[in-house]
Length: 461
Length: 108
Image (cartoon, each protein chain N blue to C red):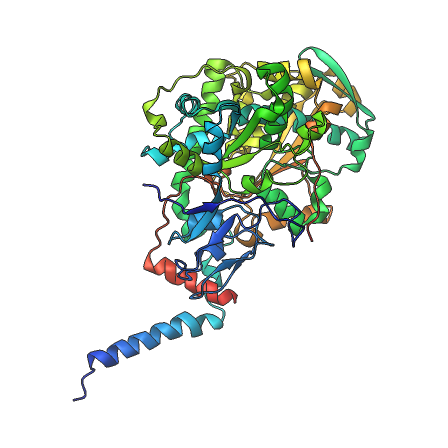
């Protein structure tokens, strides 16, 4: 059984720059209810950012300037004392407005968890049923998995460009769909290796607050949610749906509380800047998986009663590589599938085990690393002066308690001695499937475990 | 007389736990009980089965997309091909840079 998480109504963001927040950004997305908190200290031991204040027996609170909005405290609080900012009512209002086209951007991890809100077993795959429920509620659908495919094309190509530039190449020919383009890669010399993934907004904020030195290492690609918003209001509006961009209201449906913050970042009005429409946001509102279940309940829709069949069209089409973005190691595997294709020129069949890079998958280990040998096609052999490129990758499976999983990896990067080409960072252990916006299964600690936490907590003080 | 009264026992037990909970840890014990590996903490251990179950669902979806729709890697998505041929031209193009890329800001 899942537990209900208390919510409070979202606002319009901070009026001016304050602390680690810029004008317009949402501040205080996660809040500890002082009435319910008993001071058990569990939240402090799971916080990756050291943002929880208070010691055993005291009421705890969150230092919003240190908080990266991941929501791990909320998910793991044994007393259900932690609350989340929500935009449920705002979205329902927009659904009722017939002039507005409300587009749901649904993340991969939502489809393996939302069923739990309606009594099903964890991991129950809900795709066709979810699409049908969204349509019944009045949403149009832009699969965030389609945006994940966009991300791979951009981020994968960026990685190849960085590797080429640091191998001394001036240009890099890339063949896609039988068409050859030549990328100037000299400017990528200034972009260091290893490249970090940029999909996880809590990790991006973590780097911005604690390790600004590695910002040039982070891929310049937006996260899939923001790519989706910007594409929906430009290409989507003009070429696919043929509606006015101003009449589109984009709603990220995410397993994540940090996505609520991400959508409010001031630079994410790029569709508006591109089309010269002022005041238009790329993503207008974000719902967590729990919030979407709440929308369905308020509208009397039960997705589990709808048929599980898929007829994807337009932005609903996605690949296997995209859907595994929801698990730790998935972004890496999808990027490797793409890079493997471009570098080797091979086109393995869909079910070929050649597309399985199981070495990078992980749910149990805090850090996973692998070396992937990629055979090069003829013209790359000449350019790179080798027959085979060994791509070294690393997956950080959760930033870890007070940064414990990530710190050794990132310290190496700062010191310039990291052996990797590409590093994936997921703030939440296990990846987005265990994100702070997912259905909440109560944590039950035995007396002995509570005692250990208390000991550890007071020892830290 | 000489017997321990109920009240005295409770007082003794209470004092003992108080020492255990507050005094003891000051000596530095306890730290090692909480591992630096989240998956070895009491909370982490409880979440493993949930993570496994949802992960299995996600890889099942990978197989469905590959088996039924023949799409394993991102460039095989026909809509992606359409998006680039009709609109963005190619990865890292000017349109891509404007709409799909961003920058970061130190927050110190």
